[in-house]
Image 1 (cartoon, helix red, strand yellow):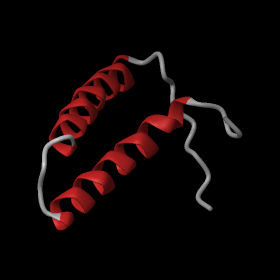
Image 2 (cartoon, one colour):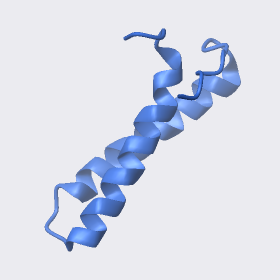
Image 3 (cartoon, one colour):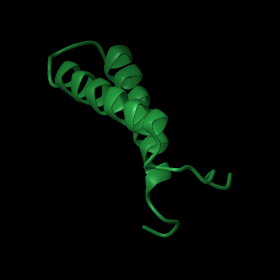
Length: 63
């Protein structure tokens, strides 16, 4: 398992990244709610998972 990097979650850079990816996550979830092929659904779910993994950097290990 890869260790989570230590990130200053109060830095302007992280705040901008977080806001961007929260918007992107919302967009992908809305797309995932629409009927589509299994391949498209799988791709969207993979993208959602990666964004959730990125945003999990904010949470302490074990949460």
